Length: 435
Image (cartoon, rainbow, N blue to C red; front, side, top):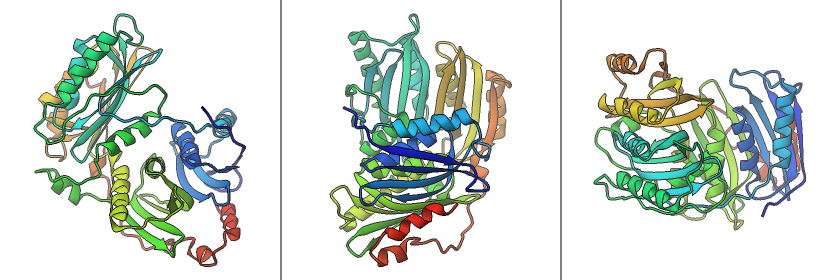
């Protein structure tokens, strides 16, 4: 069932010079922060600043947002849609577990995959789907810490709709699970049937990887050195008396960063009571005052370490390391299988991918490295583009060459410290007037 609640949203373009300010006042409930951030993220808005307060049964948050071009939101239809989405957002979502799940829907069949990452894994998965006459209409694939997860939507090639035959679904699950088990790693894939319901795709990917314990660091020849040499997020935890655990995070800024962090905290059953987010040209700083849903702060060293590891993983999963390639061409059965096969034959590893189709056109984005996690030789990319088509496959950017965030001294640490020392939150509402 769905829970409905009182909610008021005000969108203001005059309060801040360089961002649209969105005020959200609502009856508080567990998960509401994630719902609001998810709406803003799904609209491809960038949250540059945020102030969060949810004590005393009421949720009062302020978000400074800009569009993909860094501009304010001025389209009235877009503003009305944001307001409507937030005000009518309901919070019921089913929790689902499993490494391989297949769920038929009216328009497509949803397939969930999880297993040990290895070169060519996506190519093998796509080859199986093509052989079974499954057309991939959209998908998202993440890899992190030697693990891989994907949510793939497919249709029957001949009918153009979801696959509903139980025997065929069983065959798809069995063959895909065999592909995922084709590794000598100690972890093996499991096959389960997804429970009915609707799940946000990116949140589901976080849940799959969390269940697969990708937050546990894995030593892997040639890869560990690359990871350690890159800019790792900094996550620290500190308890304030017996009231809250304060989490501070510094990392390279990127789209959807706040969603990934709030999603992880929510799924780990932690509640954000107060917080602030501030992003600069390169670095993002976030500070949250949290408790577990049982009302207690983090109380043990094991729990502290686990939360730090899980937040680091949440930040890193969607980090776009590697060369970004964009494919735009006519869609057809087996297209993704052919593209990923060419990548595999040229020793490219797909670190992350976003697959989409619309009106007969495929628009796919791949983030690739060589097999050791290093930069790809430009000559190899030229060869691949010659095979696929220079106009179809474009090089967008090389995120590995992006400058690392400089160390920045800041006075924002424990932004709300004085407020908590006074053991009152009445003054917290003053923060909402800042821009």
